[in-house]
Length: 114
Length: 113
Image 1 (tube, each protein chain N blue to C red):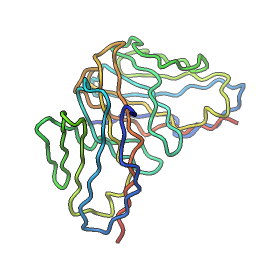
Image 2: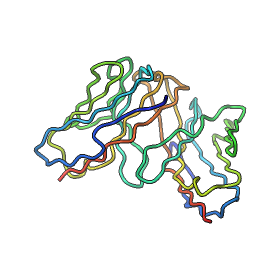
Image 3: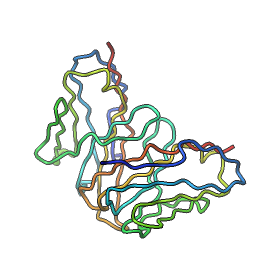
């Protein structure tokens, strides 16, 4: 089973709202990732968690706050977003963050900021 | 030179055609390579990893040329269901804070009946 699940599928939020995106995998993977993807562009890496510790933050604004409560779960807390943050947010996981580890993506959350 | 560069496309081919995509990478220290496909408004799905000796999976063949720093994907006997964007992905660096995975911009393939 190579399934990564994400909730919600769609989210519309105002600029003053606080919301959270959730990601879950039960493959025993120890690395999890958040990506942002705009239309007709490739995914852009935001954060990497390895063994539940944040190892990479690609200079993401603080209005995005990741959290890894345990090895199966990854959250992305959103606060005071801007309309330009509207995008598809993808979660992925892999066995570890090593050289040959293939990433498996969830279906994404399509976020609209109004 | 961009870190990962793909054929810009789009490619429009008839069913049954053979189509090839190329991808070049700039960092000679890059260690592993992947092809993903992404359908419109869906997530990327792993198509295949690319091994040094080349590898084949049914109608799909991937090759790596480290000397010239490019990878390729060949699709034989194209099906309508192959229509998607194909993303070249290159891993450079180690784990932890050295992790670096770079996506190409993708090549759009449309297979026509």
